[in-house]
Image (tube, rainbow, N blue to C red; front, top):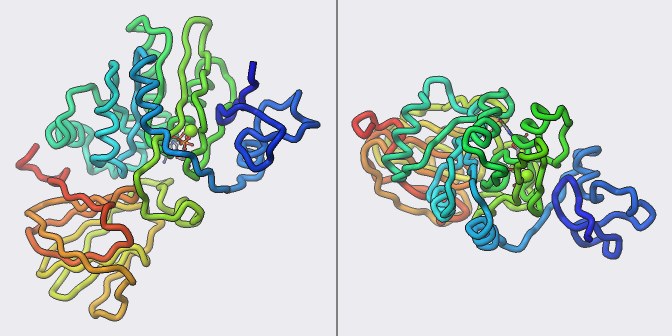
Length: 335
Ligand SMILES: Nc1nc2c(ncn2[C@@H]2O[C@H](COP(=O)(O)OP(=O)(O)OP(=O)(O)O)[C@@H](O)[C@H]2O)c(=O)[nH]1
Ligand SMILES: [Mg+2]
């Protein structure tokens, strides 16, 4: 039988250093991890892992095989792409809003749940979880025991925190330290990894779903790690006048056509700047977007911007397909 890497699930091989699963021949017999995982774990090495798009393969496998799925989405990545992927899973499932340590305390969980149910028409159970704060990490094993389930799959887009959560659960159950490789670089987990928790209970990690497109280039490790928030979000509000633009680094420029209030829900490590003239135009075509009262502009793979008043705004971004508009999470009338 093929030997698999414990860190990423891929099949170990010693024939081709350019391909996934490589281990030097001299180390092959004793190897538990592939060279890539070894370098991520011991040297925090960052490298691009380009996987073919296996989103459909994951969905088909799960819909055929799985008895139960926990699907992770973190607060900044709630959008039609992640939610529709959740909806394409046709086995019993729970939605987990992961990394809730990044959600500002002022935003109540019930508000998010109500809004998810209403705006995205979700009927499944929604729970909130943080591996970092050890919040609701026991929920999954408890759920499996109570429902007499022998195993479940943990699914979600890349970087949603699946492997970190499974390592935590494994530590809580059998005091085993991190087995699966985790990192802020996309596509860390390559294939399914089954982790036994007790003789009759297992949890299965999965390769993350990949986004159709992202605001970052796959080798821009600096931006990728800054986009991925490690601390509670500190939303920044700008009151804008005519001709005021807000820049999010050299990624986005946004210019409402009248007085307005814009609140940015993005990683604190991104730099925002208010500018009053046309000097810092970005090298992207200018879009005109009509916004209704109290809407969010979602920028997939980055976060969202709340716009208080109906307006037309100009926006520059490298990839317009990353944008979607939705009724705000903070629309009290809609709760
Ligand atoms: N703030 C915060 N960050 C977290 C939490 N859990 C995981 N992370 C971070 O999120 C990043 C991705 O974590 P992983 O566990 O590797 O994510 P994954 O879903 O397994 O990613 P893939 O294997 O690429 O699909 C890492 O930088 C983690 O440190 C959490 O509860 N809170
Ligand atoms: Mg993983």
